[in-house]
Length: 81
Image 1 (cartoon, helix red, strand yellow):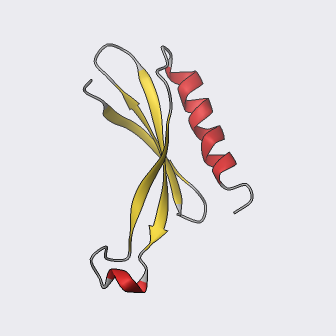
Image 2 (cartoon, rainbow, N blue to C red; image 1 turned 30 degrees about the vertical axis):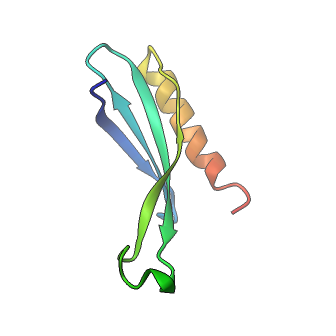
């Protein structure tokens, strides 16, 4: 499918983000990513670090439920960290 980014939310500490995406058929999904700092043994190969995908939702038929669940996933990602 041809997904395109519609919206993005970032956690208050900047270490997590969630992107809401849509496709031409009217489906929506979100992608939750977390920031991983580069380790000294990476020797600069990763720069400061990388974004790592932690979760990709299923498909939604409506934008609002997808947006709500994306925001919830971002909030829950911060629990216990």
